[in-house]
Length: 207
Image (cartoon, rainbow, N blue to C red; front, side):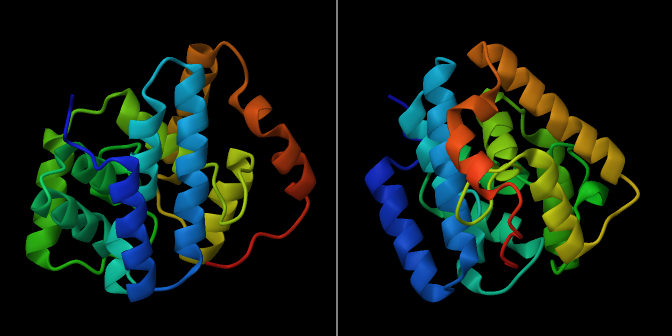
């Protein structure tokens, strides 16, 4: 049995602690992403409990407070301190379907040292289906419900602006959805049809 991610109980407890350190909509977002990850994993033959736990952890670096790129390396370091190497990789890569720091949408609030660490780690971490699934679920999860990817990506762009790589990055996210549609043998949105339909025309809360 792999011990490179927390079990569900450990992940839920750590998220509860992190939410106390820095309350906010980000906690609801990661819960939605985790639920989506577990559901999709179950339908495509992956370990739903591992994927659920990794979904809960992907933004855990936000425990430090309001941060941008910093949350990726903060989450990585926290997971590594606990011996959860795969969860650490998820924390670092969830915003990088393109393994290129220039593709990050938002402020780089990292030190020069941590910026270089992120660049190095992005070049070292091997993307597998678990990492790709969390990237996908991050891109379809608003704080209170799963949504269509285009709505979530626009919500992020409104908050953080866009970079020159945005079209390439969005194309990669769409490729991730196509990948898991094929793995599941159906459109993944069908698993969340009720909540997507009920909320499609509502304005997402500002995180």
